[in-house]
Structures are given as C-alpha cells and as structure tokens.
Image (cartoon, rainbow, N blue to C red):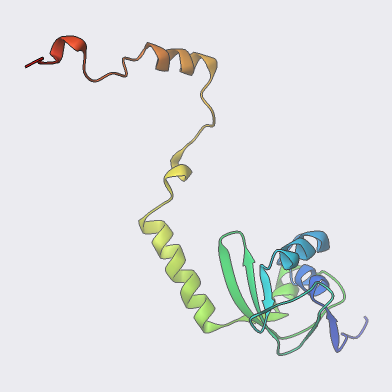
Length: 140
C-alpha cells in the first residue's frame, strides 16, 4: 500500500473524498467558485494539506470541512469519510436547512409529472378560464 503524500491537488482530493463523482466535475465546481480554501477562491491545482478548511457546495448542500487525511486513491465511502471532518457550525447549519425544507417544502417538488400531454392540453382548453362573463357586468 502506498504512503499518503504530504499535499495533493485539490481536485484530486475532492474526488478521493467522494464529494464529486469525477475529477472533471470537481474541476468544474472549483472553477465556478463552489469550493474555497480558507474562504478564498482557488484553482484546481492548488495543493491541499492536512488541516486546511474547505467550504464545499454541492447542489444546495453547503459544507465546511477540515482535511484530516490525504489519499491517492478513491476508496469506499467509510475510507473517504475518514479523510475529512465536518465542522460543528456546518453540521448545525445543514440540519437547520434540512428542517426548513421539511417544514416548507419546495412547491415544485410536489409535481409528479412533467409537461402536460396533448390530451391534458385539450382538457385545459375546454375548461372555462374566464371567471366573469359579459352578462354579469353592470353598465351602471
């Protein structure tokens, strides 16, 4: 088994720690500013060392993690989770966001199907959309 290096590329570490499925996705996220080291925007080739604090945003999930280890290989999830520790502030913020999503879910999440079919559109066209008719108006 090879010995862990003293430092390694940020994109490779994010891939090995299983934050992103591929190194290309990690590079894209770094270039879009979704990954920061010590609060500063960085480049994919930036060396990451044990003790660095990373801010990582994957989708709507934002995390702040401290680097505990480095690995040249992408291993199983328990091995990847040993490479970092999430800060207590990050855990608290993530749990609060999850609770807020539970209490007030996104309206679009309740949509079970996509666009209406041709048959659905015909049914919508037959529906009388107008709440008032000319007969109901008072010229007064």
